[in-house]
Length: 396
Image (cartoon, rainbow, N blue to C red):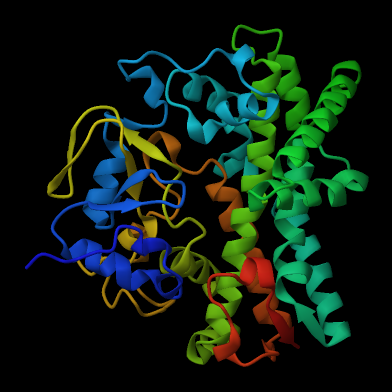
């Protein structure tokens, strides 16, 4: 029997309260489901684990659709505004060869070995945050625990001076919100980065900015817009998604008492908490917009050429064909490592090792030193999908 969908159902406020029911129906529908997004674009939603994985690997599904359209390439850079130029050079919006070149410039700083060297520094920061929360007796999970760790760690890696980080945080929030202030924040950040890059050219340091500036004189050089776009993505993606992971992990633990008790009894389960939180409620619902470069067969149906493809990570990570009891949060599950929260293939999340390390350390410290942690509001009052914005008040 065919499953009926409203054309813009995914954005219906009722559906947003529990979109997993929508993705369950998509999996049962027997094909990709057409939706019209708020901007009027056609989006074919795919939610089965095998189908999302296929889409992530498909050679004819990607980002730079203008390279394949018969009406020619994208507008020349000089025809775009500065904000549009920077957005067009984001790593998550590119395909090879540019994606390969730019990712290669920064990937060395995010390997498992490189990230592991940060563990003592991150642990010290987490200890200070937890100690301050214990002395105060209350804590706001986003501002006091989840936010400071990734903000400071990624800024340290990139080379943003400590005194500039509050301003950077404000820019990041404005850009991610996609609101009225976003373009202004992008331009201010670009001007700031121009100045920081100039300082690093004159006096290099042991940070990523200095490495990228040095690349300007090599064969793999990057231009100014690429530099701004790359650093902006690292700084924003490196904190926003990890904040989401940490705060949702805390919410899930404190609304599942048996799971919280298990972690407090054995804090080495922090790694399991990270992986199950990524599966159950990861930071990315649908991977950044991709397009079919030609008519594509996917999920039992055909997606027309040049339409958007909505590969739902949330849907894939609740697929009962892969995960036992998919709608249950269980840090003891044995099938969790099959989740796709960090994507797959050439666009696999560059900061996956760092996000896992930061989150694991914080969950470990909270369980060891704040075992009495509890919600300061009724759980029924929480909007499960806006915690990053609205906060999560806790008592110690």
